[in-house]
Image (tube, rainbow, N blue to C red):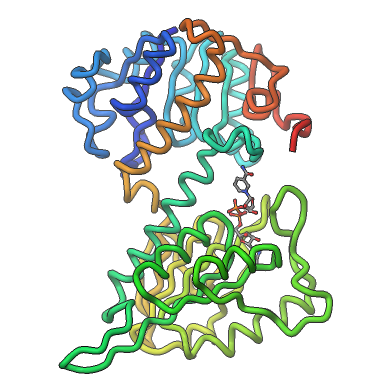
Length: 380
Ligand code: NAD
């Protein structure tokens, strides 16, 4: 088959879905690989670097779509992109079908097979294709780097001839994939890190990384686990306890990184105006939930601003794109692993096996049908 990566049309997006290295793996599966000219430029992959490994570079998006059987991209597709695709062609990209009914309907109408990388089931076998996790890991890392860059002090404690410096105190709210990456990064920079999650099972993970788990004085234990390892909304009593704890911690913290999300809902508001006002000047909040409205009441999505009391609040929503080379490398690997499952005989022939849990789970349209939501996966 012929597989190609489009240049991302979303303004400022630096990632690309196929890198020279992932293309090598796709070719070993028997596929011919194409890219649109300039597709990798912002991630540091020139057209020549693709040509050097035997990839065909075509001038425009229209040429790319016309040349291939499988179109790969990162961001969810635009109307123009789906509109140019033809019946029977496959699209691999993030799609977010629950928030994207119009594109789903258009993909169905065009008769394309749409594979949503965000719908890859989060089961052990599919971890290598789990682009939500690979991107969350980058976001968690980058959040700490942004925080450190905006914090006018060391993260690590030091005793120097010029004076003793205490370690920065970092609180991470939400210890899913992104939160754990933030904890690991902040600990490795020498900060004193504590973290909170509504799912009590993460306490051990947090502690094993050298951070402290924030326990609440709550009789029913931290009760937030729902199905599939995700969180459920907290009870009002639990939420009150949580906010009281955060109020107590706010004046002590130098950096707060919030990552708390509940599937299918707006981000819970956990860091309130009065908590921001209680923080020291020079403190930094990085709100990784900004895209879903933010965990902090004062977050402005896509912006960095400084409050009257001198707290920097960062609400960027493009952290993986800010590390375009790394994010493309990992997303490119997620995509090529998915394509490997679509090419079981490694003979360049795609077998779209709808009996396979992972392929079925990620396929959101096929044969003029909307195939989302999928039935629950058989293997846990
Ligand atoms: P997510 O992005 O949906 O949420 C981030 C975190 O916020 C979660 O840990 C959640 O518990 C927490 N949260 C929600 N409400 C909160 C609140 N009020 N206060 C504090 N924290 C709150 O989650 P995610 O990072 O996508 O991962 C969720 C789970 O899925 C994790 O258990 C993860 O280990 C699991 N997972 C499994 C696989 C796999 O098996 N292949 C892959 C990825 C993730």
